[in-house]
Image (cartoon, rainbow, N blue to C red; front, top):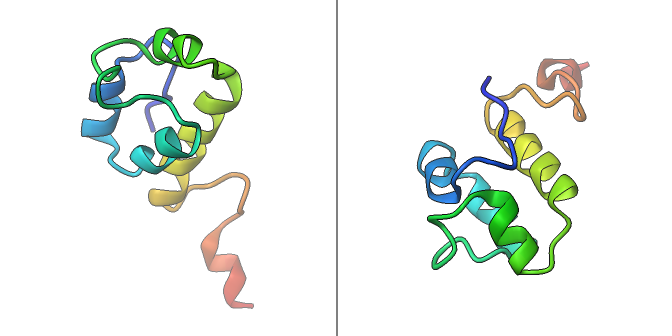
Length: 79
């Protein structure tokens, strides 16, 4: 899995990982008008701490791909 980083363009992240839209909305990061800029630039402009945002974006992608290291292996829940 490609890791989302603070220097990635928001629109590129959303296009590749649409599940991240919810995270951008929850953090109140402008992913519409600010979508053509890097995550860090837009987050700073919107007064958002970029580290937790990037971590949440990566977790959202991992969950969508069934690889969440925070949730464990979904197959383990059947026990």
